[in-house]
Length: 308
Image (cartoon, rainbow, N blue to C red; front, top):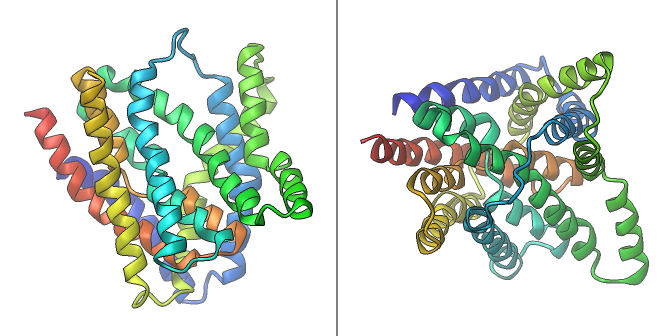
């Protein structure tokens, strides 16, 4: 519990700081919206580009490991999207947010420190593979669900959605980072420092923006939706990863890393998507808080078992 809590406490503290300042009137709703736009258009693209451009990609991808993590993630995304529409009454244009909330894990803020403390160098490669691929695979899926599928398949709306998809700053950053990696492009020192500055501002701004966003909503209602999403994220997703990983014969450390990352709470990026599209921000924000609380307990159990 100590390992998990030393990572979770600063994250909660930053969110609580943003929440308190918003409640006190120091930070307004407009400040939170501005921070969200900064994240979506500058900080996240800079973070993704730098990470992907400088990554050492393996010559032969470990397909069994990636399948063990992402096939359950895709399955949970689809299940959450379907349940949001059919059981919760969400509009088709916003159901993709349920999928994102139920499968996108907070690997960077919580997963990295936890895995490093538990496994050291032995966990670096399996952990890095997920850090490098999660946004690359799940951001386009979420964007498709919100922009393309949410357009209702009407030709003009779909055409416009494809245009917005092509100009999405997150996807553009991923594409540019992959090209830079393949070409072995090394940014000049000033450009590298600028990208690093923007990327470093990302986590703190995202957490403060989440706190400001939480201050705008009443936390007493809507917990039926939150409970469903947290159940999918913190319990079903890691359980599926564990079952598939065992079936595919993953090495124990790789399997534990995959399950631990799947058990991480909903990532801040789900809230950024919700804020960007102005849909279900309250549900996504509450899901992040609730899933982080659950993850603190679940990850403590997983780490205790793996370290014994």
